[in-house]
Amino acid sequence: MNSFSFKPVGITHSPYTERFGIPRQSGLVTSAQGSIELFADPHSGIADGLEAFSHIWLIFVFDQNPADQWKPKVRPPRLGGNEKVGVFASRSPYRPNPIGMSLVKYAGRSIKKGKLHLLIEELDLANGTRILDIKPHLPYADSREDSFAQWAPEAPQPLLEVKFTHAALQQLQQHADAYPELETMIEQTISFDPRPAYQKDDPERIYGICLYTLNIQWITEKNRATIINIAEKTR
Image (cartoon, rainbow, N blue to C red):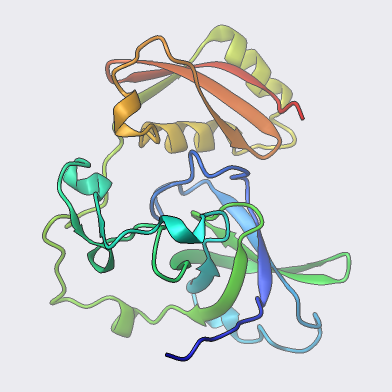
């Protein structure tokens, strides 16, 4: 068999700085914003014409996943983590070749420090993810009326009601100028319950996700997640 070598065309700047907490699909957290920093000359014209499209496909590398951890059969979360299907019938990030695809909203472009950035929204990528290719989304070709998905027919619904303690609300206000969308992003991200199934029976466990430079901590009781602390990450 032939092998192939690719050079990334850009790198992702994302509020998700760790794998835990990243939405399982794009479009679920509408407040998630970031950019793709392109490696090409910003004046080369490589992205000219993208303004004609509302959404773009990102072909990327799961570069944070160990290459030897993929399996032929996996347990998709939408099947409750109990039933196995072939990896090719899933969106598992652990694959024979660590390549992913993500549909994101295109929000324009900017030049920062001599680099061209494509602004994106509703993303599901980790900070630093390498991008292999970018393609425009074509509604007539990419959205088929006769398509179906038997065990994932609709977008998942939020599973947790998200509340903030008084102390967490005060901490939130301290970061409102730097991250005006932070409250909404916390609510949307945690509402889809990023916890692994085997941890959901521990009501005393404190969970944490990293957004931007912040560590967000919460506890869960039944169907409610309570944000208890928002603080700068410690190195």
